[in-house]
Length: 349
Ligand SMILES: *[C@@H]1O[C@H](CO)[C@@H](O)[C@H](O)[C@H]1NC(C)=O
Ligand SMILES: *[C@@H]1O[C@H](CO)[C@@H](O)[C@H](O)[C@H]1NC(C)=O
Ligand SMILES: *[C@@H]1O[C@H](CO)[C@@H](O)[C@H](O)[C@H]1NC(C)=O
Ligand SMILES: *[C@@H]1O[C@H](CO)[C@@H](O)[C@H](O)[C@H]1NC(C)=O
Ligand SMILES: *[C@@H]1O[C@H](CO)[C@@H](O)[C@H](O)[C@H]1NC(C)=O
Ligand SMILES: *[C@@H]1O[C@H](CO)[C@@H](O)[C@H](O)[C@H]1NC(C)=O
Ligand SMILES: *[C@@H]1O[C@H](CO)[C@@H](O)[C@H](O)[C@H]1NC(C)=O
Ligand SMILES: *[C@@H]1O[C@H](CO)[C@@H](O)[C@H](O)[C@H]1NC(C)=O
Ligand SMILES: *[C@@H]1O[C@H](CO)[C@@H](O)[C@H](O)[C@H]1NC(C)=O
Ligand SMILES: *[C@@H]1O[C@H](CO)[C@@H](O)[C@H](O)[C@H]1NC(C)=O
Ligand SMILES: *[C@@H]1O[C@H](CO)[C@@H](O)[C@H](O)[C@H]1NC(C)=O
Ligand SMILES: *[C@@H]1O[C@H](CO)[C@@H](O)[C@H](O)[C@H]1NC(C)=O
Image (cartoon, rainbow, N blue to C red; front, side, top):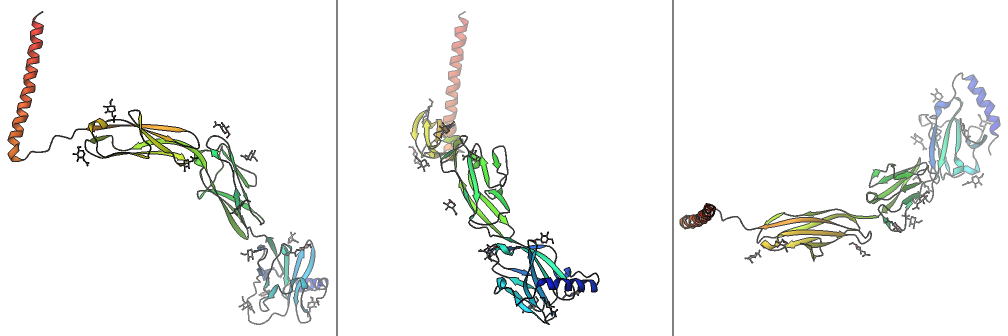
């Protein structure tokens, strides 16, 4: 059995006076520390272990102003309060105490008297672990520019100290569209935009635990930024591929018009072997089946005849040159005739 703690206090006070300025606080680091419900806490003394047992180790717990013994160990008394039986271990050479199976009720001040130097005090703050962090978001279909979305972050358990929001791994900041509730438990996005698509996380943190909830937000938008990628000039008998891209959620479907007539309903328009008549306007129409919007882009393709053959071989160079000469001569002759005709006509006046 424990003796009344009241009997101890005057004794400690007397000892304190008799040893002068020594308060005894050096036996524990000052301040507070944190414990998790269900976890354990070790009240570490600063006394170095000599291997020898201390004569006196008295731990007391104070909450709401009332002091209660935890465990007493001295030459005349040894014992642990029933509330602590089985859940404490005391190191006899340092006086350190481990307290296990912590509950909320273990929050409070703990003091230790290790004999001559008086008592030292520290504070234990208890927190529930945060568990099952979760984000709930809108259940309906969201369309960019029309409507708002609220994301709210909860946990099944836990004394919550702080919440932090992330989008695609980056810290989410408030803006004219994005506002946080006072406790940061809810993020309101109003109106929603295509840029809001992404992976949201809320990170809940308290001194003993952290947990993160996730949510994928889908905001349907587009198509926007429709663009055709491909060559603008091609030679006959070549392959041409025109690809159409658009920014859209869900992905856009595409159709192609050539000179205004619908030809294809694919992402790319492919001409396996061009002819001169493939020259024309190629229009890609992107459609989004959720937003009901369409958007298009036009690309002009010019198919050209091949360049004249390169440097002729020796045997055919003369004949080739001769033919060219004849052709040029003929054209020059036509020109002369025309010029003469024009001249003659003019002379009539
Ligand atoms: C809380 O977390 C601590 C440390 O991870 C663990 O020891 C303890 O058992 C947890 N408490 C509960 C109730 O699960
Ligand atoms: C042992 O501790 C008790 C208080 O729990 C105290 O009354 C008693 O005087 C102490 N014995 C010695 C020898 O200091
Ligand atoms: C008491 O603590 C000291 C120092 O941390 C350690 O070396 C020693 O093994 C502990 N004794 C017991 C019985 O746990
Ligand atoms: C904490 O203390 C309250 C009131 O003294 C008591 O009703 C409750 O059962 C205690 N909880 C635990 C986990 O010991
Ligand atoms: C613990 O002690 C501090 C000052 O030493 C006091 O302010 C606080 O109220 C005490 N806490 C409890 C639970 O008694
Ligand atoms: C008492 O205080 C002295 C000097 O401050 C220190 O060396 C010693 O370890 C303390 N003893 C205990 C049991 O706290
Ligand atoms: C989040 O909470 C919702 C509704 O309470 C539930 O349906 C869902 O399974 C939870 N998700 C996770 C990852 O816990
Ligand atoms: C916004 O959504 C509501 C309901 O879903 C719909 O009636 C309304 O026409 C939409 N407005 C615009 C501009 O899309
Ligand atoms: C989002 O929360 C705000 C404030 O609580 C509320 O006024 C608004 O109607 C909510 N919006 C939706 C889409 O639930
Ligand atoms: C393309 O068409 C031309 C003329 O019809 C033919 O000579 C050529 O072999 C074709 N090229 C390919 C790659 O099919
Ligand atoms: C498109 O129109 C131009 C001019 O009218 C024409 O030369 C071309 O052959 C047409 N292209 C196709 C693929 O119909
Ligand atoms: C809308 O288009 C997407 C992507 O092209 C497709 O997966 C989805 O099934 C379509 N939904 C409807 C209702 O047609």
